[in-house]
Length: 277
Ligand SMILES: [Zn+2]
Image (cartoon, rainbow, N blue to C red):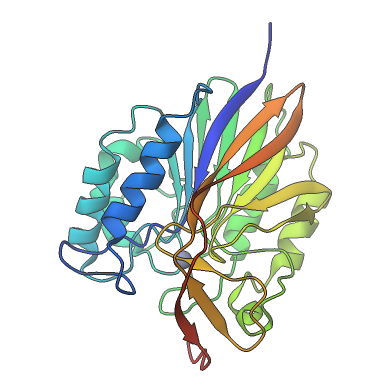
């Protein structure tokens, strides 16, 4: 029996409340286009993975409600990571029903929203790298220990690891300090684990970025609310690019096809200051 499967990896929707644009662009309309493109691929999808910045932290309850409205068309299992623009408590309230037994620390609280879910024999482990009020990412000891325990248990089937912040080095120098600041600690957990994830998927940087991390493929999805140009040296060059990754496991190997639904055609904003926390 074939164990091949495919799934869609989306990231950085940055949903805002109704009537509020994102850099002059209608985020709902852009996200609809990407979600529809993912849902109409000919390849059957086992699940959808969305790696954070699901909202843009403005009026979180209204933004999550709008995100749910957008995702109502998705009839396959969906797993979420949280990004620096998400709000844990409101996410837990909005998705309480959908989260089921996913959360490692259940209930309505400000605790990290890491957890695991199964789609058949496929196991998806999600980390929460959000540091409230800051742009960079960090994994506390509790989550690193949780991951080490999960990866120490035998599992019949592939394991996929997801998080928001980038654990790889990036070319956009001034953006680098806003990535996962303790990626070395995460890499030690992966290197020392008995079960190796088949892939590690992330977002946050809004461009396609691929490398090895702890010996496993580590891949970002393009952004949805906006793109970021990987060649910008002076700051952050935001574009109107958008897309998602069509991911496959074929004969036990992980492969990715980036699907660009909106090619980069114009610079929306060039942020030279980078004065975030
Ligand atoms: Zn983002």
